[in-house]
Amino acid sequence: MTSQPIQRLGVLTGGGDCPGLNAVIRAVTKTALYQHDLEVFGIEDGFLGLIENRIHRLSPDDVSNILTLGGTILGTSNKADPARYAVAEDEHGKPIFEDLTELCLRNIRRHRLDALIVIGGDGTMSGAANFVNHGINCVGVPKTIDNDLEGTDVTFGFQTAVDVATGALDRIHTTAASHHRAMIVEVMGRNAGWIALHSGVASGADVILLPEIEYDIDAVCEYVRHRSRRGKRFTILCVSEGARPRGGQQVVAKVDPSSPDPIKLGGVGEVLADEIQMRTKIETRCTVLGHVQRGGTPTPADRVLATQFGNQAINLLVQGKRNRLVVMQGHTVTDVDLLRAANKQRKVPLDHPIIQAARAIGTSFGD
Image 1 (cartoon, rainbow, N blue to C red):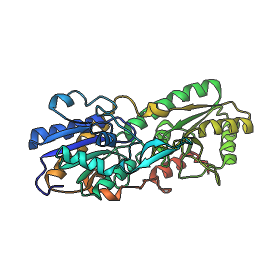
Image 2 (cartoon, rainbow, N blue to C red):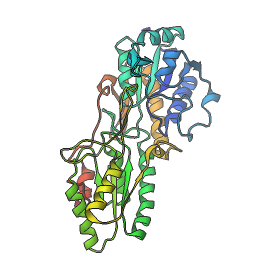
Image 3 (cartoon, helix red, strand yellow):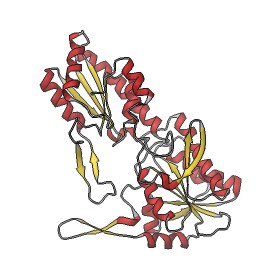
Image 4 (cartoon, rainbow, N blue to C red):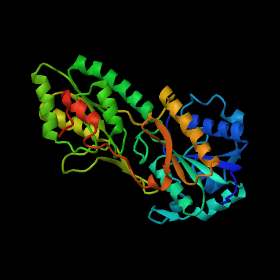
């Protein structure tokens, strides 16, 4: 990459979609064009656009009126890892992988891109780290509804997902009370329980099960029975998809060998519902929110955060900084070494103040 001032930059969105992506694209493009007279090129479908050379110039009109729009106008992919890309299948149907990094580098040079702004989570930052190691200046913008990216206190998309999950739990509450059931709401989060913790506390869930705290099924069932004996004839359980029983394993929905993250979690809610109903004889139902947490209009907080992050990404490039990750620490937007976030997940600390507050008011974490 050139050591000269940035003139042309590429922007991509990788990994799962989430609310606020378009707000970042808008802030990046408008700040670059209006404040610094830079050229901005949108890379389609994440790193797949680099592999397939699908790159186009962005104008102010391209990013107008997208602040409130969910998803991403550039498209995304959670399978296109250039360093390990599935190009075919063998005779047994197993994927054959190749390293297409050099092909991506040629396309970057073809479009004379001086830097990349990479918007994504831990997997996307791992992909960006590969380009950093090949001399490409990458600035990362932390995106994930799971809020599990190392180095930042919050990622955009998280608050919207919590808002969606909390609304669902509020609605489940009324039907649980009417039918005197135990009701489970399974939320996303993989190996980090931030969504379950925040939405569970916000909705007043009686039981919150996190990946970080192994649950004891006997303790969970006794808690449900205890509420029933006290005249509380329903129980609300907010369960992260990555929750696991003490000494047991997470519930795997499927395995996708072609994906950089092949293990797809899901189904723990139904497993728990069957177990609780069998043990307590209390009717138990499960609702899986799934991808509804990723969709729709971003909350005002996520729109503001995404705008700040996009603006800061351009500021870092203009200042001549290399390979940084935009982060929020406390109430300040700053930056850290991008490689710090690669291949790492930020999990909920067991002594987190929100856990302590929830325990103090009688919430069970299944332990």
